[in-house]
Length: 232
Image 1 (cartoon, rainbow, N blue to C red):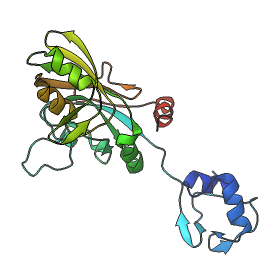
Image 2: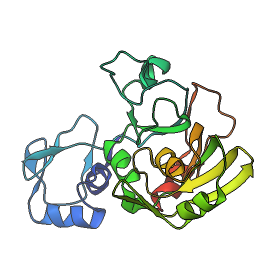
Image 3: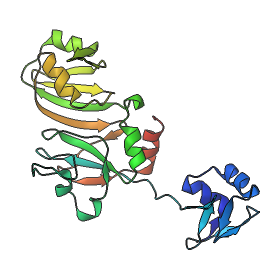
Image 4: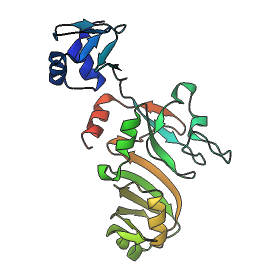
C-alpha cells in the first residue's frame, strides 16, 4: 500500500507532516537514494526513505498489555537465583515485550507490558504522577501511622509523597500512590506500624485489572492507551 511521503515521515516519528514538507523543500529527503523535491510522492513498504542519509522506517504500532502477575515471580528477564520470572508465565509470542516498572517477588496483580521501550520509560517517571492503586493486607492498622503516610513521610532519608489510604476492613487497606518508588507501599506502611502481609495492584492510571485471571495477558484498547498518554 502506497502513502504520501510526508505521511510516511510523520509516521516514522522523524517530523510532523508540515515539517516533512520543509525537509523535502530543503533537499534533505531521498527515496531509494534519489533526492526528491516535491511532497507529491508516494512510497511503498519496499522503498528506502532517508533524511540526511539516515534511513527511517515507520514505527510499529504501540501495543500495551495488562498482565495479571502471579505471586512468587520476578519482574525481570532473568533471575541469577533461578527464581521464576514473569516471562516463564507468558506465552512465547509475548516474551519480547518490555515490562513497565516492576512488582516485587511477592506482589501480585496488574503489570503492564509493551513493545515500546520509550513508553515504558515515560510511564514510570515519578514526574508522570500516574496513580497506581493497591489492595494491601496488613498485620494490623495504626491510624496515627496511616495519617503520617497520608501527609507524606521520610523513611531512612528517603522522602515519600502523601498516599491516599482508605481503610477497607480491620486488615485491609486501599492505597493509591503517584510516585512509583521501589517498594514504596511496603516501606511506608511498615514504617507507619502497618506491615504488609499481601500486596495486590488493581490499577495503573485508567487501566484496571478487573477480572483478568492470574497469569493471563490481555491487549489494551487503543482508546485506553490514548487516555493514558494524555496524562503524560
